[in-house]
Amino acid sequence: MQTDETKSRYSRQMLFKPIGPDGQTRLGERAVLIVGMGALGTVLANHMVRAGVGIVRFVDRDYVEASNLQRQMLYDEDDAAASLPKAVAARQRLSRINSGVRLEAVVADATVDNIGELLEGIDLVLDGTDNFQTRYLLNDACFRSGIPFVYGGSVASRGMSAIFVPGETACLRCLIQPSDGAGETCDTIGVIAPVVDIVASYQAAEALKYLVGASAANRCSLVTLDIWHNHYYEMKLPSPSSECPVCSGGRYPALEREEAADSATSLCGRETVQIKARSMFDLDEWRGRLEKVAVVRANPFLLKAELPEGERLVLFPDGRALVQGTEDPIRAKTLYARYIGM
Image 1 (cartoon, rainbow, N blue to C red):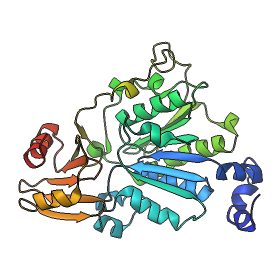
Image 2: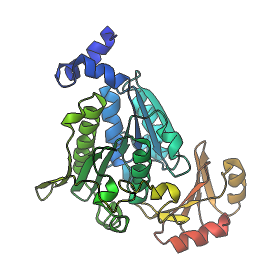
Image 3: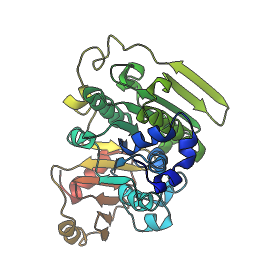
């Protein structure tokens, strides 16, 4: 039963007949997972929380920097100055937008080891990632679990979006093969904020349709657009491919092993390489070690060390390390081995 406060807050949304009071009630009973709280993820979270989705769980491995503020709408200069993890900063901002939504912020990397736990109790997954390795992981995990997956991607002035529904549509692998997933990134050709907002809004619209039970209205196509050159294309989703291991073979490669999962992974949008350690980091212990050889700053969520070589090392409690100032995995591994050990 809806309260007067609920009716007041969502009055304009409920006046929209395809949602209405019944759809609003359904939204309050649903749970979504947003993977990646960068440009796309912040817009997605903003829409889901303002729309009144009951549980919004989001996961991100990174922290806020000044270069994020151009397009990542939930963060401000104070977040960047404090090097707050994006999930923490997002939770702080979103909790002031809608206290009636249950926010679950996870500071971690989405991997084959934790994806099952992240999906527990989730009705829909929204893609806010910046790399295809993680997208294939989400695709495979969602199709194994029967959870719809709303894909989105943007770079430069271009964007793409589609919703994949297990048992009803092809999956991401049917459209984009792993070997085709690499190419231009925001690190090499940049990105403008308006295309991020548009792509994430396309994703959010498909999510709302599904969550209120209007899945028949979902778009059965892949949208591709370029807002600078005024291009828009829509490609009907094909039937599941007979060569797709997920749709036709019942295999989920990203869950059997992390595809192309080297110990060092370049991140989009910055000169940064992520390295996964075999164990967690005790930040107090590592602060004591690294202060002898580097300028160290730390907060409860991470430790940053300015290395003598010019690069920066960022350690997270869950065992991740970022080597910033290089795109070369070999260079990153060398520095990591020098100060942390492989």
